[in-house]
Length: 161
Image (cartoon, rainbow, N blue to C red):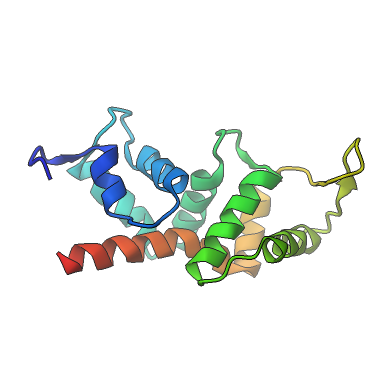
């Protein structure tokens, strides 16, 4: 918008109206590979190609990195819930009970059961490794929907202008 040839966070956010601000910010940070606070054309093209590439492996890696908010190399239960919430939002339906149920299915598919936390209130699951995430993505490719939905939103916005 400012004709600088680069996108700052505000310009990038405008490309995804109505999307989760934290998710859009995380995607911005992943596109901004040099950490300059702006996305140059080269970074933007590389970021988009990672989403639209033929390689499913690249898409899985991007989705994992997008939701690994603390850069631990693992998806903790909260990060997985965010991913699943975004996936359901992309399908037009969000119910907290559905998200938790899907999370349980993800862990069950890996043969992992929950343990009660020390207060006995919440179920606790171990973090998922990248390898486990890849396994889940093969069995449940709809987990890639959030990144796909954001890409489609950006493409639609671009075409509308």
